[in-house]
Image (cartoon, rainbow, N blue to C red; front, side):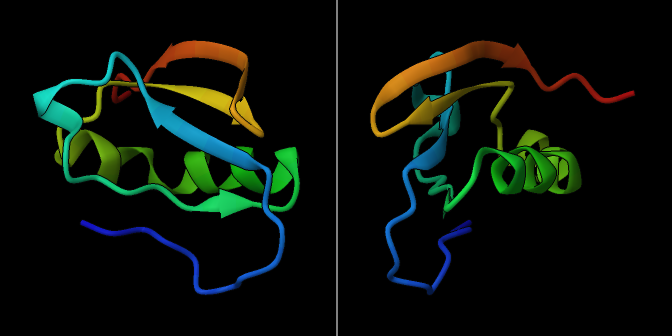
Length: 75
């Protein structure tokens, strides 16, 4: 599944599946202009990520880990 955004503006905030492994390979996550946008998106799409085999994510800003890994347990 590809969640990539089509906007080509600078978007330094991303979610990275953690730990990276075969269960999360093939999942491409979008990038965002703001931390708030990234966090809102995750709240709206975490169940889809779980369905794709992603069990935890870390929030990254320009490649630097801000926090995580954060479990995506349903419930």
